[in-house]
Image 1: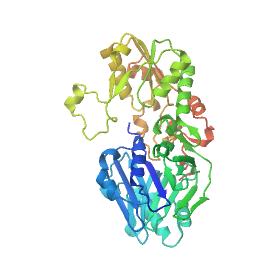
Image 2 (image 1 turned 180 degrees about the vertical axis):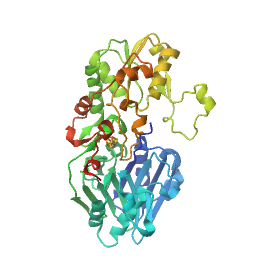
Image 3 (image 1 turned 90 degrees about the vertical axis):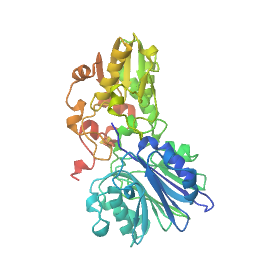
Image 4 (image 1 turned 30 degrees about the horizontal axis):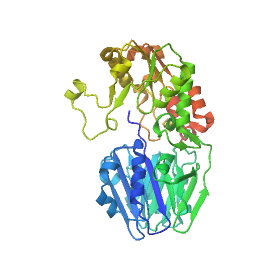
Length: 449
Ligand code: SF4
């Protein structure tokens, strides 16, 4: 599954002698887990805004030359797992209205088609949001403009925008579904990012989460903050299970600690007599470590991953698939052969990947038994807020029991972590989480929006 989500970053140096383009670049590389199809940045030097964006990984797309050309003391960046039809729709999008605005966001504004009329009406959600903000900025100061835009926007979003007047505008939706944090380098720079790990990587200090419904406006002289639309929090539960980096802290909770707890609760709920535990890299490794700690079953390295997942420019041909070119995961035979294995993964969507892995372990490598444990609860429903979970028809968890899935994937036993176990592991109250893809009940949609 391509779990669509995006990553945003914004850096503001209060001293014009700084050049932030390289910091934005490092931040984008750190957020690459959130999107590998497109990347971009908009950098401001006091007069001009330079936008550089394109397809591919940030570390491949940006060059020494392009970063040298994009000099500026403030700017924003974006990575995305989506490939829009037209390059101008790669984020940050740039709207050239009376006020010029560059904008990058993570999430989905559900009513984006209704936000602007006339020449700026757009089929692209980010362009629609940027156009709305540009329109509001014509007659209001940035804080009021963002507030007025948020009043019209319905959905889950975390955004950073930059104007040609040198203002950075930052906002998080009223329920805080998507993560967003703020950090700083002493008194010299302000930094905004989707995940705290990006703040760490660029050498800044994490200060706080941007709170749900909060707006920040940063200019060369001040940082203004307003809690504009505080609503009941509904933080995305899937960020903790899969989307975020394990070294991030979001909404005050460590992703790593949540993942270790997931492994502990999996062991408590679904113990099994086995010889080794292995985790499917990368996300399931902490689950597997904690499962092993809790049960005393030794953990082994079961697979080596080649490359950055399968979303590379060169995709396997049919023939390469047939002969089994196994870029993604190569099993370590010596660890698995003849063993009763607990195989831990992060989620199951259609079941195809799990079936292939179990089949490879059992039939090609010679595992004696394979017991599958999944660190997330049953994924039974799509996500309306920009994470690509397929339609219900395609989700194996929505239709089959654990025994049936076990047969389909060819495992000896199969189990998903319970919903209660997942909530306990995250460590936030149930009513503060969005668990729409696990329950079918969604914030915002519940209110008929
Ligand atoms: S529906 Fe699922 S993936 Fe989407 S925001 Fe809610 S918990 Fe996250």
